Image 1 (cartoon, rainbow, N blue to C red):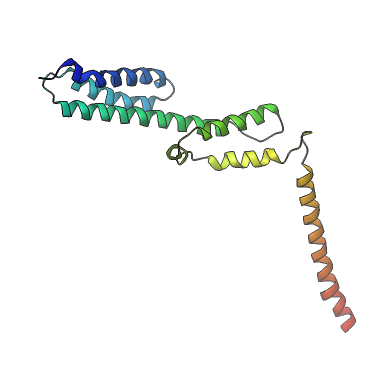
Image 2: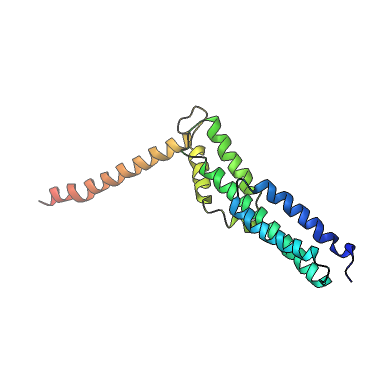
Length: 173
């Protein structure tokens, strides 16, 4: 016969999973519903006096995996939402805080979770866009120098075309 001690770990996982289920139910209904299905299966095993230790172990492992999956999914959804909330990049404290918060949340994810953040490129773009501002909210010196150098290069190319193509044709005639 199975003793109460054999079901101790399962009881703890049921309690932990139920607590997390209640925490996420309002904002993450789909994830909560998936977790609840595993909780109900585990409760059925817990209440059955004719189960084996192996069945208890399988139920415990399944519930543990479901709880981890739910937490992973919630974390990923939260990061995606924070990145989406950045919106248009402006030189404001609010925008900088929004970018920094999204980055910190993203950095706190595991490698596996990061792979599921579908809008990571938006975060990188926002960081790059914000970094182009200097303390006054204008373009930084480096950005301005890059624009000027690019313009000089274009003008130089146009001069070369003029000098070696158009002007040479005039002399040839």
